[in-house]
Image 1 (cartoon, rainbow, N blue to C red):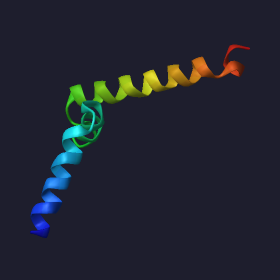
Image 2 (image 1 turned 30 degrees about the vertical axis):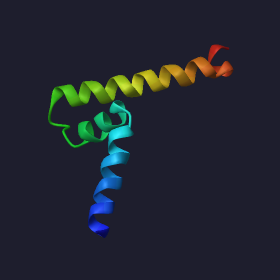
Image 3 (image 1 turned 180 degrees about the vertical axis):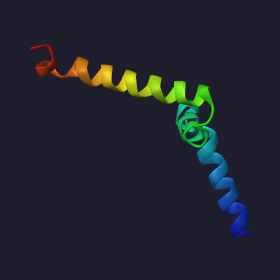
Length: 60
């Protein structure tokens, strides 16, 4: 019964996790695919742009 409880708990946690949070670990496991590299590069660029927009010292 304990195994079933753990499996059910894992399934429930996974089912409510946002889709993008699953994409990145999968992309990191597939670095030999250009699509995975594109996804990760886009995420890094977007994060850097967000940080730059929030950083007042970046603009002068």
